[in-house]
Length: 120
Image (cartoon, rainbow, N blue to C red):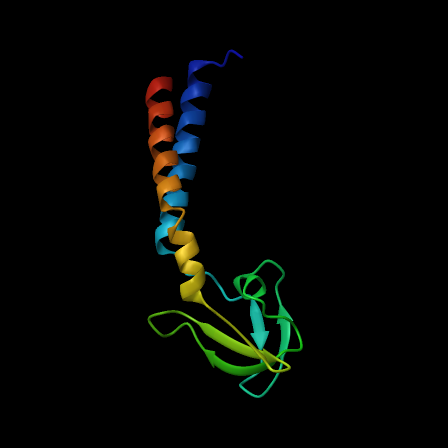
């Protein structure tokens, strides 16, 4: 496939920008909980499918036993019960998953930089 030089440079820079954004996201973002619970003693009345709370096992209709907002240094935390089973999730758990992607973001940043240089 033959691309013009300007197109090659543009694609290289686009990939470089995407790599930079992935690096920033991996290192700085705190994931949103993705759930709308009542206060402790109430019920979870909505959970976004695929959200951190969903991946942590929180489902609609579970009783909320403890909730802490994102104003603390560790981010949010949510504990529910389903029968006698306690289910909890926190931002800390999901931040660790995001931080595990930092090496891949660094590799993509390096490869994108090389691609942009070679295109130039």
